[in-house]
Length: 109
Length: 114
Image: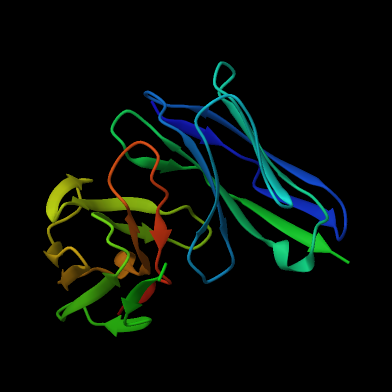
């Protein structure tokens, strides 16, 4: 079966660093995506990992370990506008994106 | 232009109505998608069009009927919907289907079925 797990909610303080974990079990693997979705808005693409290791893009970094079926999204220097839902999505053998339930991040002053 | 547009933004329809959702992109993308998203849930894939041909139908009820008139447009025709079909309907596009091609999402149509 297909299963993607993320924590439901996280809270962090403005200026801090937060790590959102994602574990997956899917039929095949053709890449892992992270999307950000603000309430009532469309998801926006943050990062893509297909090889093991860390991809850095400004304040956001994403890590992948294929052998462990594990990824994390690291957000540095948190800002209030980072309060949103963060979706981990895996592309399996069929080419479809399978989304996790999303992690709602609340950034507090 | 990296935008996917959707109309209308909001739609309220009765169970006997027929309506259509529209999606448009001008990025030259050849894959387009319809997703359904309920509150506090992730998007669920409904349909995928690749080069204007239906590639994936995720066992969606026939009251939802997709159409891809050309490479820039994607429609979702709605007929005899149920209240449980109320959700945010998201359109997305990507350069092509498969492997690494990030999907760009439109703002969605919030549908309420009464």
